[in-house]
Length: 214
Image (cartoon, rainbow, N blue to C red; front, side, top):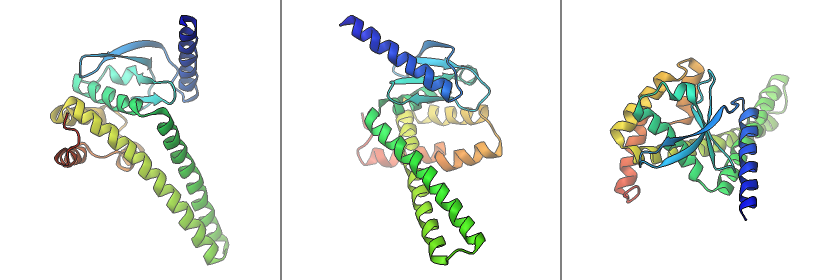
């Protein structure tokens, strides 16, 4: 039995390292971080100049974190990053897999359809065909955006519940300051993430409805 567990662990570790390399975040080493509850959680460390703090590795129950950015953060910001990624990790793998497939296919097919709609309009294609392609592309893109935004919102809600409202707000602001402040990064944050104040308001509303009460 032990040999099977060791084999499963080696396969998980190998898959995690392959995933990290394919996504441009090659792993340096394994380590651990402390959750807001005081428990230890295993993580994989990488270091580069990207604005990516961390990500969850689908089907591996693993989290990889950018050590270069993480080490520069104040304690409350580190807890926000950890709890946000832990929230992603706790989602059922099959649900996460289905979610990821819908998001990726929605964005890819939707944006391609919008491209062809624009190309058709420029080349003088029939208005009905252009409108159909534009509607199809817009719908898929919007659904994919909504699914992605919902997942990130839930992760932020779990983080604010774990670390507390004040620490979440301070931690989030420090994260924004430490990450890329360019126009593209600002647009991505605006599109895919709520502001910490909006998360706090939503958290209060859900709390009044009986959620996040434990």
